[in-house]
Every structure is written in structure tokens, then in C-alpha cells.
Length: 84
Image (cartoon, rainbow, N blue to C red):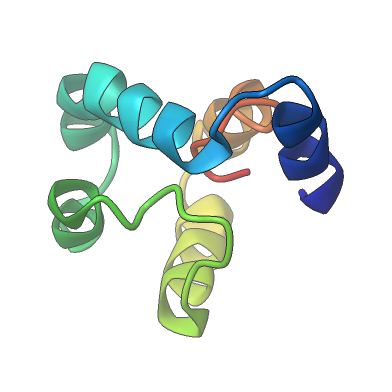
């Protein structure tokens, strides 16, 4: 993750701002796909922060274990800001 931030900074881009824009762009899909327990993080803009809380990490891990489609969703977004 730190390499991504460094690369964006070197390119003159604001990584955090790009992540906020990405979250806003994907908000509807995320609210549809992710369990309701994630919705406060989506609405609060903290779902895709660089250093998610321990609670959010644990929720994501539990969701990945419960939902077979979750790993494909998170892998698809691994190179993007969401769940990076």
C-alpha cells in the first residue's frame, strides 16, 4: 500500500482524494454488494482509507470467509483504493 501512495505522490496525485472519488463512484454498488455492517464505513468514507481500523479489517475478513463471491470482489479491487 505504501508503494501505491508513494507512486501517486511522485506523479503529483493525491492518493487520498483519488480514493474518496473512487468510493463515491462505487458507492451504489458497494451498498448493494456489501453487508449492511459495512454501510457506515461506506457512508463515512472510511471504507477505503489507507489504514482501516482493526474492526473493519476483521469484518472484511469474516465476510471473505462467509461469502464465496467476496474474494473475487476484493481481488478485483485490490489494485484500486477499495479494500486495498
